[in-house]
Length: 111
Image 1 (spheres, rainbow, N blue to C red):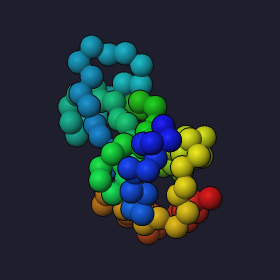
Image 2: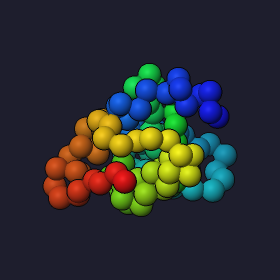
Image 3: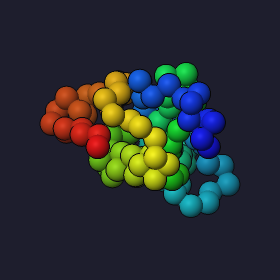
Image 4: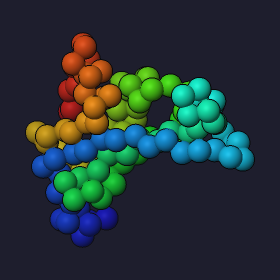
């Protein structure tokens, strides 16, 4: 991992969630009415080049992206801390639903 660290651009971190259709069930699957299907979600944090540096576990998809976002961010940043990646002072870019959630009262502190 040491040589890979030199290739990461941690000046900007991008957080986004993906929704995946779960046709065969499994863990962390839930019905989402607006998609009329069972869905799973996962959040990934990428560097400025789009390389994934951390992600959450698969979570049930019956909620919006901001549901339990603080817990999901804790999980992601704990993973980064365990890897020993230097993430002091990066710009964190969020998708629109996540940005709205931060604007209504959630303070994000990366340590």
